[in-house]
Structure formats: structure tokens, C-alpha cells
Length: 455
Ligand code: ADP
Image (cartoon, rainbow, N blue to C red; front, side):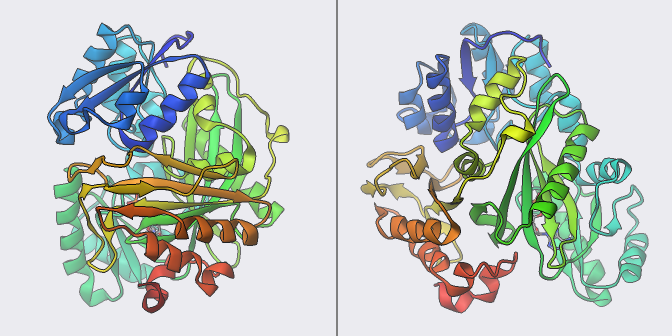
């Protein structure tokens, strides 16, 4: 952590909706904002919104948003106090965080050792085991000989899940249903991990057949205080990627909520965490839950937590980064109502969800009100380029209870108008209006199980 100081000027090392989201809060706090951009984003909304702007380079991320040294140089030149990395790009890059520290720039995120500790899924599991946080049964050691790994899988019993220790975004994972398939799956997962992450260390987990993905939002300050801002249910996934998220998790009891919240705080405290973090768990029907990983950044789906707690998590991040104590104690936090988030993508559900690029010739989101929020980084006539994640917006709705919030979600989806690219809006509408979804029959296989009715 850099020495605490007031943040007067903030550089946002990101693009799209999250850059815009961060700029909004910075403005509210009276902080001057600096946007960075690639050639593809010269006229992007986040650049228009910021007080100052710096060009990084050509469109590809590796020549622009991933160029840590360029971003630091810009920050120094413009006399920036802090850098907010958003999510993705450099947000969980310990080297970038270290560079910030070296130049006495506040990195709005956890300290280097916490990022490093959670950077490897196997190392993270080791730490969590020692801290007494429940883990999915499995193997996460250093010995990687294929025969040795297979022996573990055989003993554990199939199905098992192979996971790349360095993995993320659902990549480098392979489910293995039978001993005969083990070596082929291991080869494939290792290859994918090596090409995606430059590291093919694997861990093995018991494959849970009907779990829910429930994650806990935690927040810690530099003075040893920590709170949890309850849970999000992100079970509705496609290829291990979240599609619709909600908070609170349906059917959660107060007892389980505080048990999971305390476990998440224990996880954060085990690595001296500071800032916003998310501890992801798999939750089984019988209430057993298991640590999967901790994301050491602001999550895409943080708005549902903001909606049910009435807190601004980016504001919390900035306050904590400048050395202040947490704005609220645990006893001052409560859940109010229910919120959903749907990720609106330029992609084609009828063609393997391939990204759809082009100009947004018509873009009319549902009207925003106190309970309907659209986090976006694009305006009508902007282009969805092939260079970045093709997310158009996040649609977030809130109401007093789940049923009402869901009605709001389907209504807002039906009013969302986009032309010029193909979108997943109809798919999201079908999902949100499905009976099983209304009845909260959620598991991570929801989409596969109801495939026939969703397209
Ligand atoms: P990534 O970092 O690539 O997103 P995670 O470890 O967070 O990978 O897992 C992503 C998703 O994969 C989870 O949300 C869940 O749907 C599924 N998953 C992960 N581990 C298991 C497991 N042991 N059993 C069943 N499903 C799992």
C-alpha cells in the first residue's frame, strides 16, 4: 500500500462501462478524472466523460490497455494520485500494482501480496485450507505427473473437474466423467492453459453435479476492519461465464448467510486483504458450501450488491484506498429488497454466441429511474469493435421482493432496443421469464438444462 493520501486526481486504467461507472463516482466525490484510450476508443464515452485523456496506442489490448508502463508514464506526467484498474486488464496484475507502489501512486485495489496469494488457484486453496475455510474436495499440490494426478482422480471418484491453477474466465477447465477419459482431458486442459495463461499447472476437484454459484462481497480497510456486504447468486452461467446475477441469493437463511459471510471474511483476513474482494463459493442443496476462489477486484456484478445495500462500492474503494476506515460496520449493513443484473451482449445466441460487431445504429435502453440502472460505455452510433469484450451494457433492476424485481427485469428487457448488431436480449428475456427461473430453481447448469426453451 502506498502512503495514505487524499485522491485528488484519478486515472482509470480501463474502458467501456466500468470506466464510465468509476468516473461517475469520482465526479460525485469531486475527484478529477483521467481516461486512457486506444485508437479504437478515441471517441468513446469514457473518454468524453473524463476531465483529461491520454492515448495509449493501437486498438489491440496488448498494445494499449495492457501496457502497464505506458499507463504509469501517463499517470506520472499528469500528476495523478491514484489508478483505478476496474476489472479485467491489469486489475489483478501484481506487477502493475508493484509499479504503482514504486512510483508512489495509489493502486485502488489490494496490496501486492494479496493479489499474488490469490493469483494461483492452487496456492489460494492451500492458504484457505490452513485458514479453515471449507474447500471442494480435491488435489491442489505441486506434484503434476499425469499418472499421479490420475491416481488422485480415481481415488476421489468421477466426475472430477480439472482446473488450470492460473485459469480464469472458465478457460483451462475440463470435466472428466470416467477414468478412461482422464489423460485425454488432462492433455486438452493443459494445452488450453498453456496457450491462455502460459502455465499448465492443474488442480483436480470433485465435480459437484448440482451446485449453485454464490459469492460474498467483502471489504477491508487498512486498519484491520472487515465487513461482508452479503451474497450474490451467479448460478446462471454459460460456459462458466455469468449471464444473470442476483442479490440476495434466493432461499438463503440468515444462519447460512452469516456462516458464509464469516468464512469469506476469514479468507480475506488470511491474506491481509484490503479493498473490495469477492469470495466465490459453490453451494450445495444441503447448505454445504466450498471455497472456489477469491477475486481481488471489483466484480462486473457489483451493482446488485449496491442496489440491495444502498452503498456505492466504488466510493468505498476510493475511501479505503486513501487510508480511511470502512464507511459502515457490519451491524450498520442490511439487505433491502432484491436486485437482478443482466449482461447485455453483442453476440448471436443462435450462432454459438459469437461476438457480433458493427455500429449501434439504434440504441435505446429502457428509461432509467431510481430502480432501473443501465451501466454502459456506448452511445447510439458507437461501434462494437472486435478488439474487446462485446458487452453493450449491464441492466440492473431493483424492487421490494424477487417477484417484483423479476417482473421489472423482463419488462426492461422487452423495452431494450438495439439495432446494428445482434444481441442476446431475447435470450435474456426467455431466461428471465422462464418458470424455473421464476421459481428460483437455480444451478450452474440452468441454461443447459433448459436449452430447448431459451432460444
Ligand atoms: P474461473 O476462474 O475460470 O471463472 P472458477 O473456479 O471461478 O473458474 O469456476 C467457474 C465456474 O465453474 C463456477 O462458477 C462453477 O459454475 C463451475 N465450477 C467450478 N468448480 C466446480 C466444481 N468443483 N464442481 C462443479 N462446478 C464447478
